[in-house]
Image 1 (cartoon, helix red, strand yellow):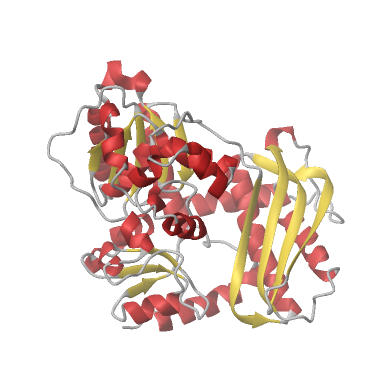
Image 2 (tube, rainbow, N blue to C red; image 1 turned 90 degrees about the vertical axis):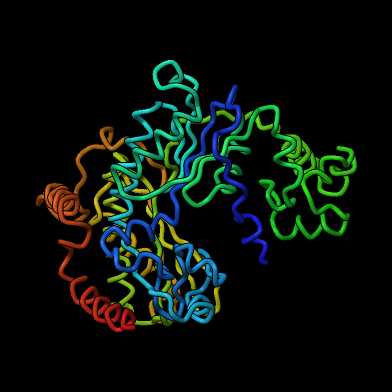
Length: 421
């Protein structure tokens, strides 16, 4: 059994929840989220191994159904390996717009319970429900309410861990997947933690796990019995102290409702290395459109635009430019990114990845009206807002710049070929 499978192996799912006294922290995690959303439109695929991700030679798995996971398929795995492990898997392309809409609806459910919601990604969040107890009942009852509402309103399932700390709540949700609810009593934290493998501790990657195994420490309980001074000598003061605290279930972090975005970006790895500047420019345009839409959706604008260029030999350079005024316009982002690419000296160099990012973010309401560089005020802002409205109603891609239509048509044809069984 792989390290990843060990960490995500379901534990026992008891009938009545355990004592939840003092357990106000919930970790809610959607079950195989991307796959679950896709199955809403493809119910005939239920029960079959389904993988969502890039189908090209450099594609990676974004999500896998539990049927596919039985074959060893997991997220971030190269798609070529996933196909070898599970040849009969149905591979579906990623559809970010659909996932974003379902995620927003799920987070509305969370915020109807408590304002203390800390999103970790589209499909998971911490909630502090201490303030909701008088209105909605005990934490375990609130957890079940969330599961019921997510299933009834969105047609997908989630798993919820209930504990007195964020660390233990997250572990609990992992151990009761899929479609489970697990309460770790405040006085049962040590009993819950100590049988787990050391890899379950936050901060234990493969290298640290190897170091701990070399010391004969394979479980959290074994690590907990090692003197703090010994752990700090072997792992360093910071990591040794951190793991010692977690091994005894001590995690003082609070649920933080919102952490402002420091930057918003997007990148693309090509199926084959590209040295055609026109293809690169079209990809920069597509990425700029995506970044601009995300900026406007988040209500932010940024002062610095950067491009990331990764060559065939994996050497990577970044170039950035700070604008005179903040922007959330894809047109401005694209022109800047294109000029940075053209000035990089890599126009005829084979690239395997390009990326566009906007940094130094602030509320868009503070930004003055932007012009598209050498263009007059010709309505770019109004045009892009209209595109946002169309995308919200009909899905991202319903309207796009003409330069991207041909590429999208080619991609649709390729996806159709890849999807044949």
